[in-house]
Amino acid sequence: MGFKVIVESTDIKFSASHFLKHPLQCTRLHGHNYYVYVEISDNLDENHFVVDFTHLKENLRSIVKPMDHYVLIPTESDELEIREEKDSVEVMTSKKRYVFPREDIFFLPLPATTSELLAKYIHDKMKEIYKNKKILVRVGESKSTMAVFED
Ligand SMILES: [Zn+2]
Image (cartoon, rainbow, N blue to C red):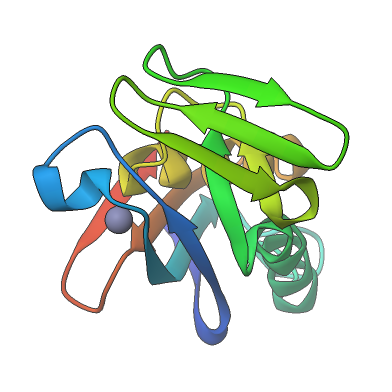
């Protein structure tokens, strides 16, 4: 298998806020402009493509866009207690209590919203579309720090 396509586009990014368990400064609510990079490897199809770039970008955008400008809350976290009320969501850690408008929240079925797990989340969504292809997803919280998940 020698072919690979890469999407590293400045327009496929998302801005979101989150908080983590560690380290200390990340336990406070803060935000990032996340950069997403995807590589797909496979043999060429009948049109001599690995995948159609236009579709690849559209698909990636459709996965990333729902997170853009939201507060990311991991629903599988052991540390968080999440209570949904009518128009709001209460999120409690062992030390803090947040109340967010429901419409500002994007729930992720993850134990935490680290870049590593965000990369896996995007990878798994891409894999649903490109089932038989080898996929690598890189999520960067900045231009110098990034996490990768690949199959
Ligand atoms: Zn962060």
